[in-house]
Image (tube, rainbow, N blue to C red; front, side):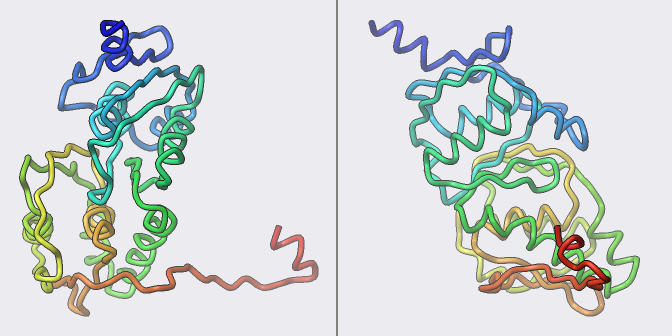
Length: 244
């Protein structure tokens, strides 16, 4: 039965197409926008048995042209067991996260699998940074809204990644010493705004960034204990209907 166990480790059936771990090209034309959203809703079938978590998710994402990124704080060698038939891709990824007490969030066109507290807040943190930039003028807002493909090589450190992000956009980054030394595996992600790229890296250390008033410097800072977006709306004559 050893051959059967080996086969189960390798095979994932995506609708009528057979998929094998490691078969996808490292350079993928990632889906974005409405095509990304539609793909997450499309049903596929998978069979994973005693697979390695990170590599299985990466290969699955590449096969579907959906970028999946695993938080640095999650054991990449953990085992993955899942059988699903005609289940939406988004539901499959959420089920993987649920089995390991993790969370799933969407940052740009990237599925970010992380610790539950990060998954709950990361999109809000990114939106708060966008709101901050509106107060610095259109030039700064455009710079941080610029979308570029996000990639780095094996053994890159998060400090190096942040430094290169800043320099490539004419920024100075301070407080980098607060980021612990770490060595990351290579990544190749779709175009993301500078806000989302910085947020993706820093959230993995429970940090975010602040932009100086001149828009030329950023500083790595801890994420506040309470993260929320609060907006006021006039109640009008029937406030309960408006709330709904």
